[in-house]
Length: 112
Image 1 (spheres, rainbow, N blue to C red):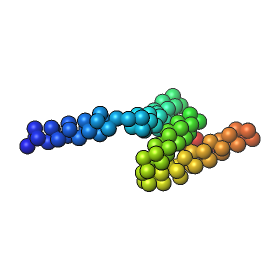
Image 2: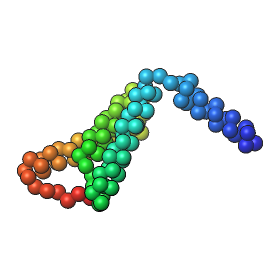
Image 3: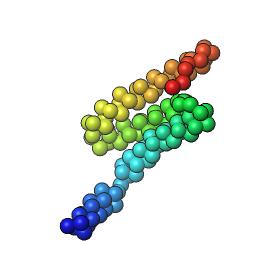
């Protein structure tokens, strides 16, 4: 039974990641890697600061990865991805706008 499960899992993974490999799968994987990189940036920045911080790079990685994931969702006609990343990307852009506005006015916003 365990061997059969392992074979079925191997067949499934082959089908998903090898047999169906195309431009959009590669694009989607790169989008997800870009999106995941935001957590690494945030973690490294927080470790360096000794406190939880959200650096500007976090928002750029969020926006880039989110926008690419949105494009992927539109191309693949995935309503869950379109709705989730559509709204999230707007929020990322708005956060960047607020940070830029805050820096331009010279005020400091508390970092969480």
